[in-house]
Amino acid sequence: MYIIIVGGGKVGFHLARTLLERGHEVLVLERDGRKVEGIREELGSVAMRGDGCEAKTLTEAGAGRADILIAVTGDDGDNLVACQVAKRKFHVARTICLLNNPSNAEIFRILGVDATVSSTLLVLEQIEQLVAAHPLTYLLQLKAQGLHVMEVKIPARAKVVGRRLKDIQLPPESAISLILNRERGAQVPTPETVLAPEDEVIAITRVEREAELRAALVG
Image 1 (tube, rainbow, N blue to C red):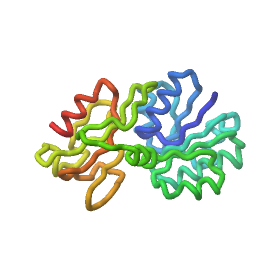
Image 2: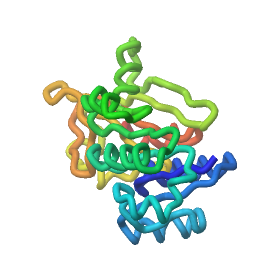
Image 3: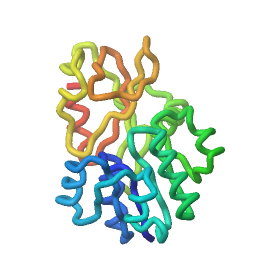
Image 4: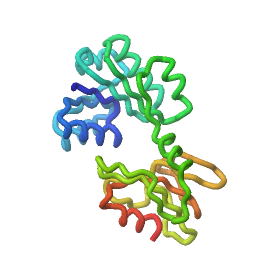
């Protein structure tokens, strides 16, 4: 299948790499030239600089023959527009949209996006089913991809307390996707988010990196 990915951030990059490994034809559309060059260095000529919301860019990308368009930028509005243009002008059979704000799910469905994905909702669904007594609990094991989604409770004396996420060295191929705080509730973190004692962190990592991730957050 020919798959166009709008957004060349971390999600777009790893998605492109996985799809290429599975034998699909992939093109990543990204506005930031530096990200485009980074993808090309790692994956080859599978990235093009351009705005995936614009019909001109999608024409150059060959959207008319695309089987799927996946929009994974950090802006829900951009993701929606890219999916709508792909569907209405180029008649792309299936559009998939990353939701940064899960409350947008219903409106996106009404406006014709075929499928939406929210990491926040996926993680919260797992939390609701969880009865945890250990500070580190596996929420979901993605065996096919070799990934673990886990909950890490930050001890009061952990070295990461009071530090911004961008200043914390996590293992390769690891990320923090959600933080549960007693006062603030659930929040999708940014690089400036500061960890507090007793925060419950939802993290994703490779199976073989689990011990390193635990050491980085708890040790």
